Image (cartoon, rainbow, N blue to C red):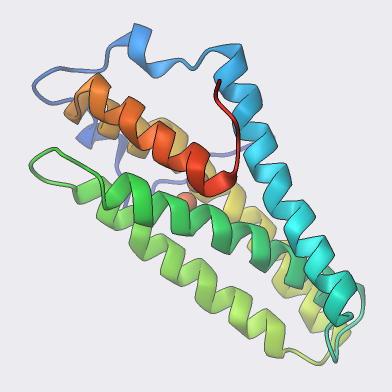
Amino acid sequence: MRRLRRGSVNASEVGGPGGRAADRGAPTITDALRGEHGALYALFDAMRKMLDSGPPAFGGLAGLLGTLLASVLHSHASIEDGILLAGFTGAEPGPLEAMEEEHRGIEARLERLGRERDEARARELLEELLEAARDHFEREEVAVFPFAEAHMEHADLLRLGEEWAGRRGVRTG
Ligand SMILES: [Fe+2]
Ligand SMILES: [Fe+2]
């Protein structure tokens, strides 16, 4: 079962002048499917890179999975920071900055996993990371994305969506 942990990203900060418009918050099914393609492209790229360069020099299954996880999470977080936070047009990006801070924490844990040579410890670190990533995603869905939707014009959200499509190589029409 997914659990929501309250961290530095706070659901109570959602709201603001325009509030959260339900008709702006829900993606269309085709937008959602394009998003899934974008994430899978990142996974394909990570797998291709690994095929080209070989598996990590050390670490067993956990090291291998950790390298894949690092690739896709890094790619995802760099879009959230580089497009959503960088393109935020509201006054105070508080929850978005908290999101960026959480990304740095996850990156640090991924680096630790990449350096871990003991397989049992690497498995523990990977399991903790998967849980931390799920919790982080849930905070974004509950607090960060609704905050951005409530504090930005819909046209700006659409413009950043186009930027996302370009970065991910997803065709939108
Ligand atoms: Fe994130
Ligand atoms: Fe995310």
